[in-house]
Length: 397
Image (cartoon, rainbow, N blue to C red; front, side, top):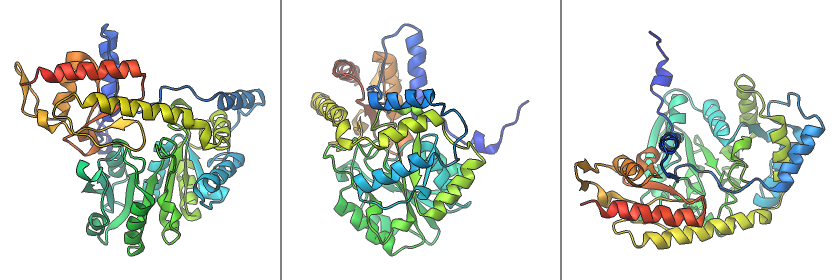
């Protein structure tokens, strides 16, 4: 008998990846599945970035790189942060990783001791809670309801902080809700952190370029707390580079050095060719991505309009990312024949098996009344998906 570690036995499978796997299984059986479970742009990587990767191959960028990434890439990231975000970082304050997910994990493992409290607003990105568990931290959740656009208040934050609080982690624009914190809202939260100098802020900004007002605000802009902010970002979403696997961390130099040390014993550097492609992405002006942004906004508006015809679905109006996160609790307790909908997981499985549309239950994001609907696909598929969902829900009594 093979005995695995408690660490892996207690770790939950990513619900988004699990739903995607179930979708593939149904597709393999010949079913016409519309998969709206993954957070992946359906666009291609821009040509200038692909050309930079081809050039890097021809110029033999095929050897080990520094653990924290090529100096030229880290300098390009620092310049991007100054150009787009008015933030001052040096190249040595940046660590390039194999995706933003690794950058998040690096930060937690460098900051959190067993039993330290990590505050996470709910809804949160599916991996946050499991990452904290891997770091042996203790989750402290703050519920941000749909009535407040899924954003927490300063008072909620203040009441959640204790002497054991070590890290606050959040995303803006947010996965799964699409909510975006304004500068004024971030400033109010920053004032709470000013009064609590023992708390670090892990700011996941991977959806920076998918912000419908085109004006991203980072909590690192407030100088009084900047040394305790760890920015996480990358190229997966804004540049349609999910498979390239490049993310980065920008932080106080002591934290960056710690992440570099950890990564050196874990994965070392990410792919050399992907790094050169990322360098080109960092040198690309945000305006070059607005075509994709406008398409996402068009799809958001399309889906929200279509959802108006589905009774019992309560939605906010997302200001970023490419998700809609409706409250579907009005369907709990309803049934179709012997199939009873007890919760969001039941509802997602019912929709998947009934009409072959894959969604993700809100339990995975700390919001059990909701489901996540990704609109990162064509208008035609979105129209068909909502049509199928409407028909399936109409059969519930």
